[in-house]
Amino acid sequence: MIIFNRIVIPGRAARGLIYLGVLLCAVYQLPPLLAASGSHNGFDVSRSLVPADKIQSGGPPRDGIPALNAPKMLKSADAIYLRPSDRILGVSVNGESRAYPIRLLNWHEVVNDTVGGKSIVVTYCPLCGTGMVFDASVDDAQLEFGVSGLLYNSDMLLYDRQTESLWSQIMARAVSGPAKGKTLSLVPASYTSWANWVAAHPDGSVLDIDTGYGRDYSRDPYAGYDLTPSLYFAVSSRDNRRHPKEPVVGLVLNGRAKVWPLRELAKVNGGELSDSLNGTELQIEYALTDQTVLIKDTTGHTLPSVPAYWFAWLAFYPDTLVYEAPN
Image (cartoon, rainbow, N blue to C red; front, top):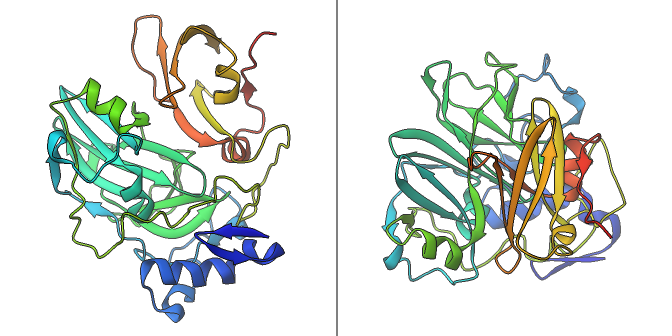
């Protein structure tokens, strides 16, 4: 039995698509028949780069979870709706800093925005705990993204409105449609507390809670999900060395992946450690009180790492290297 948003679901039923479809209909105010219509929400996955039978409906239809486009922003000092401990994804581009609270991303998952003159897409998958920010330009074309309502390996599939291609968030790659095989460039982002972010970027801005949608942003629709080992959707690879939802930070360099579990970083004193990946020397900076991890190269440049749940990273990178603190 698990408890999801104070709803008790017995046994394996919590993992079923019927349950999740009903739940998401209630959360996002969708008509049940609409949420269930079409196994792939109108997308052609017949020649996808991933097995088509592994692409699953998450419950809502295409755009049933509404992306935010050119959203309203507040000055950080005016964001009285945020608590110091609230989690955010923060980006700084060309001297401009913006924060995107997870309490809003839980309900929208995709934000199309422009920061420092760069078009970006901010993405968050609540099922995988993955927060990733991408350059929205591909081959000199600026794309706008929406939520497809589909999942692969329990992770969200975005789609771009220009070509209707499906993009895997964690893979940062189009898996079907005209853009199939193309990749998105990650923009370095900080997954941290609001207090930590605003202290470092007092003159920045933050996503306005007035999004134009009638959502109860004070409520977490995934409350308790991070505590249970249960997954709602099947994944291609499992590793039981750690709790499935244990928080980790991953990095991919030239095709090689490595992950740093926060529990391992907690065993090392000092807030910094040296490591390497695929011949690149790295400096890992971490502040466990804020659950913040930054990975930099030897020049001090921040690399685009990915916060995730353990199971999600392993589903896509089963051969990943795993950092373990020295005894």
